[in-house]
Length: 539
Image (tube, rainbow, N blue to C red):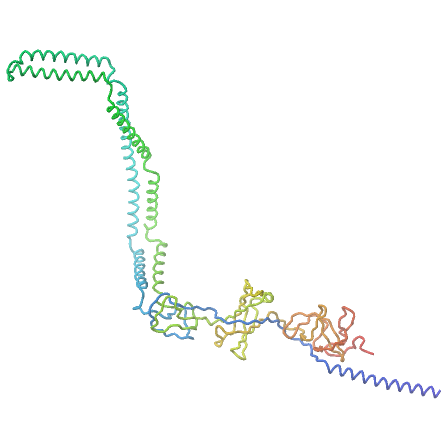
């Protein structure tokens, strides 16, 4: 019995000794493992997702003021940095050096002003319009009267031409036969000839009875006179008789044909003239005259009560145009701003297109950025931005996204879109053209459970965080929300503020509930207090 009791005591001592040695080894191993990892504590705070880009500043408005004519510059007193107001005179040309064009512009302005004055105060426009109306009416009336007279004359000429043609036709028709076919006419002509021939014989016998007497003998003279008269009468009667019996000569027929042709041509001319006039003047001529009358009537209606507003506006526009041409001899500020460049001096000879000043509205400073299409969806107008300048040390400005372009530009396969940021707290240190580094805050959470990005690992699409508990590294699956530059938001409920997470864990990490889909059990750490051991942590 004593021997058995001693042996039992010996085994207890051995077990206690080996257990103590094992515990020391286990504790030493845990201490060594804890000292070899780096951890950090999960915190709650604000987190922002950002997008960085760089660009150059520009003013809200910028304009280069150039000369629009040539000449000699008068006094210039402005210098870079001077403030100017809208429409303020910046410089002008010496009046003694103006070009012919500018001298003519002066006269054009005087003429335009006089025309406007006449329009507003003179009655000559109404008088001219009334006279034009009367003239147009007289023209229409005259055309109608003239048409009536010409139609009557043409009708008379047509009737005369028709008569002449008929006479020519009759005359020519007679020539197809002897001069007369009437037997009574021929018989009478023959009788007249026979009687004349008998009278001639009797006169000849009577003369022969006295032809031996002296030439001055009254009886011989009388007998001779009767003989001569009888002979002439006999020849005339013979000719008449023969004319009735014989046909017309070729010459007479040719002349009659010619007269007939002329009569026919005259009739055609008269007919055409009458046809063109029987309906009055031509439709085109009358339409033109009536259109002119209608125009004159409208013009009279427009001006009879004095100048209308349209005429006044047109005259004023002419004055303004002439004034604008003359204003080319001077330069004025198109908007309020700051003189940033001065390119002229007093006495310079300038030409059209020569730049004189540059004006910038520095009350608003913008930065133009080029953002990749990949990041464009995260941007919206109104997002806040932080702006830093290499030229301005130790100062950060605030900005705001004011415009996101809709048309991208492809450069070597990369599509970028223009984005504009306005600096909301700009000061005089910022100048146009400076290079700026812009960080746009695309999203922000004020109370987020924050885990360093270095503590998050991704395995097969699942994100894990390694929690250090009692020297053991336990891998916990998590769901991540907003991702920042250094931290990410954990939106799953496995972790709590104050939990210690490993940022350089060892490869031999335990997994809480190694079964797929099992999560880290919250009875291990709550707010940093030990509640119970993780599964399998006890020997």
